[in-house]
Image (tube, rainbow, N blue to C red; front, side):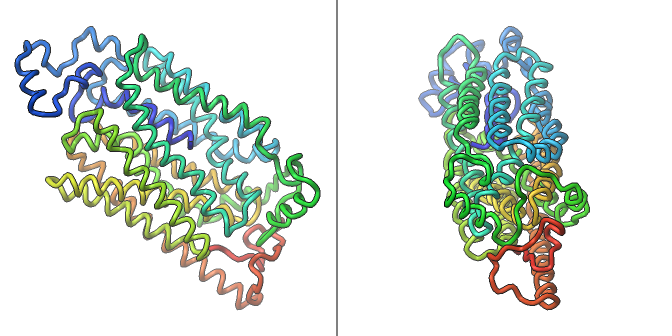
Length: 478
């Protein structure tokens, strides 16, 4: 699964007890009535038993001391993004100097250990440090995956492959709800939220260790290919551009990435999508609770939106591969997410419509991110520009994650008008930016066709090691 999606889901048990319309302890959540019979049983109990207020003794068992406003949780959630943003570009550029299995494996191991160590946090400072370390290790993983995949898949294959990878973030959302439901009902000696960190952290460490031995390195270096397979794969990685040979860094392409205005446009796209993603990933159960469901049932109801989202993401990405047109797909997906937030803003009394809105939000937002990653995996031309440009727009976008984690304070429930309105506006802004980007790519392609002649074979090798995407015969995927 995507570590970033997983780490947001891991914090949900803390959120359930610290923010949202009702502040309840785990034991009180189980006593919350689901039907009339349960209400009648609870009404017969003493007032001290049925009270929904947390006692001082019980608050002392909670890591964040109850945190009735949800402010401390917001900072714990967003601390991850500060280190993640700062470390993304240097970590990804430096990763070109090491075998992929080493830096991806170590990043996964470090991330999993940091997640597991969060189960030992007993105060705000301890959790903050653990979250910052999560961001450091994730910085070398998130942008590195599309860079690594571009070594093995062509521009006509990247969309679906990125959908498979990022789709696991949606699958993680579905399973995260199920796991959180199971953990909330576990009767063990430790706190339930500590168990969740262990359950989701240890498998990542194990997979990271396996990656050190099982993940193929660059096609020209890996021992997994014979000579004939290696020749074929090197030919594949040179379709439509010219790949680097060995682990090299072109300093001119680093500068070129920072001067490329389209990367900042992608950053705006990514900002809006990540704001919505951070909001929906961390707060979807809280949002569903505003429909009138208990915590446990809200966790279960998060599963269908994520399951549908994975299907929509894969189908849209497949279409973008076949059509070799990604901008329109991104624009439509962002509009779908914006429609979902618009429904939550305007429909207050129909829970069926509001629940449908969560399907629109998850499907639209996850698809925007998945297709954007595939879009810029080819359009930057060279490996070094990809290694710089991908984390550049991702770093800009992750600022949206910081914003998203602060948009749903408990004090603004159950309507959360500000959170829904900001997310809605950013989704529709993404629609406009995607249309501007796809139009600019189409104009650029036509200008090059008129000046240098139309490209007959879009799969032919183009020398991009000097000029990257500015090479005369290079053509963008619009």
